[in-house]
Image (cartoon, rainbow, N blue to C red; front, side, top):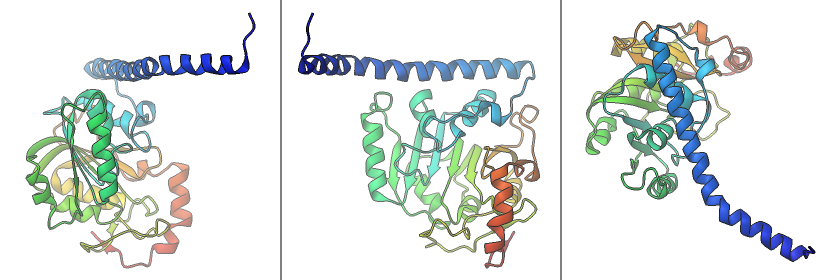
Length: 293
């Protein structure tokens, strides 16, 4: 049978468009199924005391790095209380730490970001996604400070115990977490500054209008040791970081202490990316006006 070039192209693209929605749905379903299989495997492992490392469980679906896999692992070991999460500085929601739980595991969330365009895109994303359009997460445009963070959260109706708080402000993260009292999260994931050596507890001074405009400037945020000190004061322990050492995971004391033991900042600072940051980036900012905490 003889086909023209136009006929071949037309046949090809008709086939592509006819099958694309089905294949897209299939991939989404397979992704959810795979994650649920992992969830049940981790739970079964925990029942016999078998632990995995973060390096073994990490993967990315919507997170920037492998936080999605680590959070799935944590909440397979820890029974969620109400499947509620709060994220500060969520961008447009298509790359952040809570979206995988919301989309693929039926959680509800309240997300915040300081960029109005990002919030609009995020609201559209969740309101049109087949797994969230009936009850999309809250997504609010707000500039977050230590003074307003509790009111911002309370105004959404989220108070008391929640399962997850994610902080990635690229600035006054330490001071905002310190100020939060209106919610009581089981797990906190936050970005720290891995250029700071693990024995140094420092943060930028508090300024409600702190805004990072130069992403090459390492004078921002807080060190891992500083966040460990703050976490301990709030009743949390550091249980690990992702493979690059700067996104840290804290768990409320009394929750799966045996399966998720406390680790040290030093043990989270041995990867090549972090050790290079100590050597090359810390000397450039170590004399800036850090606050020791």
